[in-house]
Length: 169
Image (tube, rainbow, N blue to C red; front, side):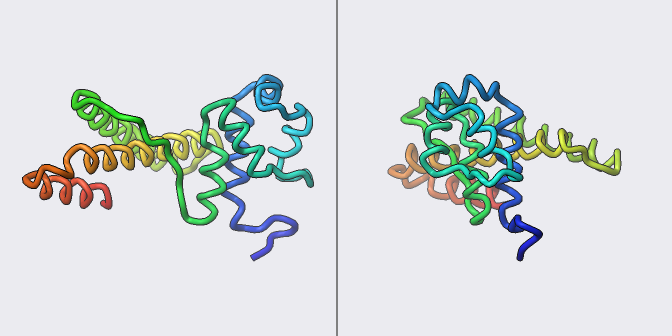
């Protein structure tokens, strides 16, 4: 269960902190979130004793609209997060489906390339995790949109069941 000072189940969160820190200019994010820059750097570093609080993660999300940290924390519990849109048109639903297909295809391409190389670099891992997280969120949003748009139409119940079955593959 324990590996030195770090718990094994926090690996996903530590990875999320690393990805978050590498994607932003932390001085700007810290200012926008109302957190001291050096304190933010310390809290994102798993080797430091300071830790992000829930309030910190909310402030960072509000400053960046990036759910990486929240998703990393939830992933340690076997959960994930995604933002639900307010409403979409039928055209947006079709576009979302096509974009999701492209993202999943891109994941497959990345996995094939990594398999051929026989090893995975940290950068490749971060790219795959980010792409997979986006795809999972998009898939969940698609399912939500289908349910909300077509739940009152009885003939589409079978289509909804088929979409849910395909999502669980």
